[in-house]
Image (tube, rainbow, N blue to C red; front, side):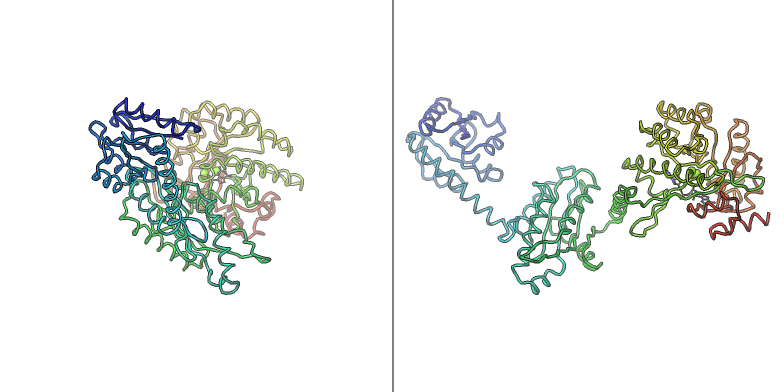
Length: 579
Ligand code: C2E
Ligand code: MG
Ligand code: MG
């Protein structure tokens, strides 16, 4: 038993200690002594003891004050007041501030101590049980409304000092009445009990799950660090409603509408009323949007964050669920617009039909390192396609795949390319790697070494989006680069901006001087071509010749046939002939 004695008189303490040992002969005692409360974290000492014996006169301190102050933090730890002489006034005060008992030091005997301590502990245990009962929902055994309100109030109060997020979920079961009416109240009760269990399993022990009334639950998630963690918690909570609930020989299906409000660190809110109102409003929106859904309160930022999280999550299974596809966009020669190469561009066919382009989803894949898996898939798929075209007897052209800096940093990058080329028996000169100028900015020795290894393999390295990445021209000399692709934004403006036109023509000269092949992408009309000082070594890429095409349509280009046969390339054949 952990006993704390707070007494400034050492002789008294030793006397009490001896009596305690006699009083609890058969029990192992751990007796701690606080002589001067000023030198201790008394609140903590009390809170971590099983019983406290507190002297009334402790130097400048009074036992009654100490007991009084400890009620908030240690109201359920039994505290016995000790004093020099009997005094009815102290007796009254002691019981008022919450002391469990009051003993006169001169009267102390082992028997008296034993009885008083046992009774005090038992009494507090009983109090604990009652408190728990008063704060527990009778049916589901989770916290009840009173406990929820108190916890929320405390959490909001303490927020000023906590540098973390707080999320409040209000969960309302959909069509619960229907279950009660059609299958009876025992079915409804079974459902509430099971859902409570699952909700409690979904969150940490320190979070609060409460039944707020009939079919309504509340969850307080107090203290998480990253803003987007709330979506992970939301998904876990939603999972509680996934599996059907067995009841007798039937199953029950619970669905719920959920409203959430998130408080950022330091975000002020006027008490629990306001927080609950916000969560209720979000719940209302969820109910209106067809039930069985979760809505976040208000702010546009939260919505954007939620969408981003959903994209990131859906991307993690994009490869395994076969949702990715490569499109191919031809690169043609200046002289006769014959196909000389193609760029592989990633497309994501999402299950929910949402269309999101690679410039939106690739950055998410990069953020979660998912890009490594996706990038490997892209390289394999490009090689697989090349192999299938070769097997069909077509004249293939080099295919350029886009790679991100994170991929290149991975140790397996070069070995994987080597293995894939050999797995599909592809000549390395047929695989080119496009890396953006911005990614090349990282002047990492690793990056240089990797690119060198790639070009030693025989694959060409192309700098993509050249001209916007602020890279120094000297870097061009150091890197094993054989092609540059001027950024699309310059081409888009050459008709309206003299400067853009000048830049393009200077890059054409630069490429020539440095002996680098130049690709001009984003060509959309003939007047752009007329404005540029093109030379024969340059390759052109853009909607004018062809949009990125799926495999089958792209094969028309490889077959050298009339690309007009595919609707996507109507424009190409018309414009080529008109030239
Ligand atoms: P990028 O590598 O610069 O690719 C060229 C983008 O310009 C493509 O957009 C293409 O559809 C578009 N484009 C081509 N010609 C024209 C034109 O005449 N006019 C206009 N307005 N646009 C044209 P897309 O397919 O949406 O790809 C966007 C970016 O996403 C790519 O820019 C590339 O940075 C990235 N990306 C695409 N696929 C992959 C991939 O497999 N891996 C990685 N890491 N990034 C990829
Ligand atoms: Mg590219
Ligand atoms: Mg580009």
